[in-house]
Every structure is written in structure tokens, then in C-alpha cells.
Image (tube, rainbow, N blue to C red):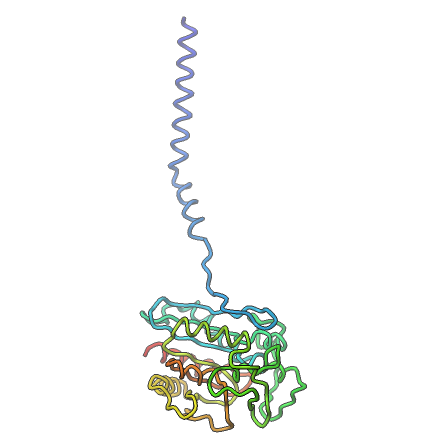
Length: 297
């Protein structure tokens, strides 16, 4: 009888110990922190794929801010020939990552750093982030040789000038300087142009800024005989004043058809083109001042 009682007491003590240990482990602060840490380190997507190039390279849009008014920046529509417009766009991405409060309340930003990824890859070996040292360190401002790979990288894999493939006075054969270029089989025949069209129409931004090089100025947009949108005139003035670039109310050099910014004017979306001063510089301080002024409007 005595042995039975002793055995029962031992069993009760063992059971109580197991219950206490289990309860303490379940409520330990260390376990709560571990659970929270796992949840908080789940990565968030900083960009989205908005389309693919002829060769299947992704076209990416990076997003910042959460306001209702959206401003969109687009680089490298002319690929590797204007590689500095892509580099400027990536610098803006880095800036907003490091300075999220630079975007005012009520505003959000989307940056498409490389609208022609196939063209960029021809010159720098990638359609992703690259260093200036990976790009050609010379300027084609005075001489054009279509056989040169840098010049050829202005176009997409089909040999089409994407900034002649939008639906504003589109023509199958377009002009670049004194040369005739391919504009595609129809407006929006190229996947890169379609991707931009679909993204911009879905987003309905309040302003779109296209970066190019190297005509050193800020250029308006309008289609045909129509006047520029009131919003475009304001956008043009704001960016030109803040950046110090010359302001152009018309494009004075040659006739341009199928232009992306001009097409946006037919959709009621204000857009301008910022031409960097050379094919190498990103004019960082000037453009950052212009960007800040636009976001503050």
C-alpha cells in the first residue's frame, strides 16, 4: 500500500513538471519575438514587371509613396545610345529608397528606368543596374554611323525607334536627325511601346517625364496642330525653372512623329521630355532640383 502511494506521488510530480515546462515554453518572450521577427522580415516587392521586350527582357516599374497623385519617370527609351538616361533613373531610385520622405504626402512615384532593355543590353551587357564605367565613354553628338553598335542600340531588337512607335501622327518611316528610321508596322506594334501604353493608361498619372540625351533642354508635348495641355505648360515651366535647363515650347530640330510624350497629350496626360546635356552626364543636381519642384506642386 505504501509503495502504491509513493508511486502515485511520483507520477503527480512528474505530470506537474511537464505541464509547467510546456506552459512556460509556450509563453516565453523569446518565442514571441521569434515569431514576430519572421513575420516582419518578409520581403516586400519594390518593383513590378509591366511588360517584356522583343527578346523577352523584363521592363520594370519601381514604386515609391502611396498618394493619389502619381508622377512617372521613364528612362532609356532609346536604349544604350542614351544609357545615361537609364543611369539617372537608377540614381533617382536610389535617392527615393534612401529618402522616402522626399515624396510629399498625397503623391506617389513610379520610375521605369529602362524602357528599351534590349538596346541597353547591347551596350552595357545588362538591362539591369550598371556603372558608368561599363558604358561607352564617348559622344555621338556630331557623327552617326548606323553600323556602330552604340548607335544601333538606340532601336529595339526589331530595329524600330520606339519613340516613333506611339499613336501621334504615326508614320511607318520616321526621321532621326537627317536619317530615316523604322517606326514599326503600326502604332504600338512593338511590345515595349505597348507596355508603356498599357501602364500609363492604367495608372493615369498627373505628370510623366521622359529622360533622353543629349539636346540639353526641357521640351513640351503636343500632337499635330493641337495646343499643349495646360498641365503640360505648367510642368514644363516648373521643371525648366528649377533645373536651369533651357525651355522649348516646340522641338526645333526636325519633324518628330509617333513620339511618346506627344501621344500622352492626346490622352489628356501632361508630359515633357528632358534632354540631358551630353550622352555621358546625368546632370544630377539639375535634375534632382527639377524632380523636387514637380513633386512639390
